Length: 113
Length: 113
DNA sequence: ACCTCATACTCAGATAATCTTTATATTGCC
DNA sequence: GGCAATATAAAGATTATCTGAGTATGAGGT
Image 1: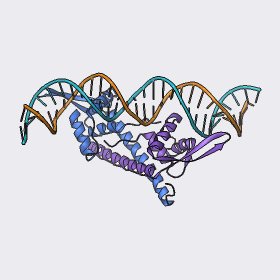
Image 2: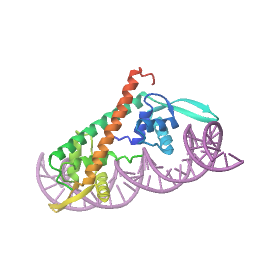
Image 3: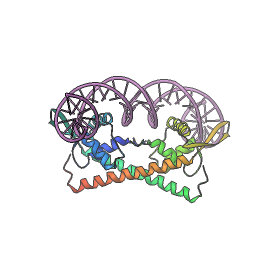
Image 4: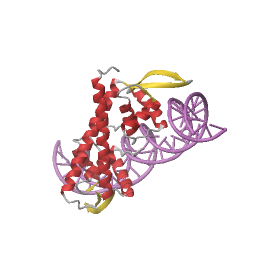
């Protein structure tokens, strides 16, 4: 079965589509894009970034140091963009299949409890 | 963060929308609805059905015995229909957000590698 | 001076859904 | 006789994510 991307991973990629961002910036962008519905956990995020980097979906853009604290910026690779595009298409298809089935059920008077 | 439903779970619920089905029937319906893209594993399926039953999203419709082998039919509860509807809406929103971001990127000439 | 909040990252341990594999059993086809 | 399809169950492994703690700085409030 087509390996499903998990939600946090999906939002990380989506947050990086328009520009390179550092960890905290990704968390904020994901929250903003989802109208506050998505709150990425720090532990999830950095683990996922390591994994996505190893898989070649994100690359390290550059490192900065601000007030003695390091900041690492990440960006999508071409593979990352392609993966997100594929995933988006899959989500659309899944949603429309379920929608169609749900609509068909409604026609029938909703017998089941 | 809104607890994300995993794909196999999503397909099990979708396969049960129109009628009660037994395990093997669910596997076939999921394959059919997804044009062969989804192949539910038996181990995943029965574990998920137990879980979904415990959560009240699916109910046992009835048991049959065919050739000495038991067959258990499952159906969606109202809660199951509602959960699938919610999940479908979420998928649509997620997909359209990612779509919008991807489209915006395309405008910019795709600088990043 | 002290506290809290926002920023920014790291790591250890637990949880939970899924996957893999194995087992069992019958029917029908070649 | 053996293999594929039907049909379910259960043990063991994998893995992404979550929880929670730790480290550290600067700004704003009391």
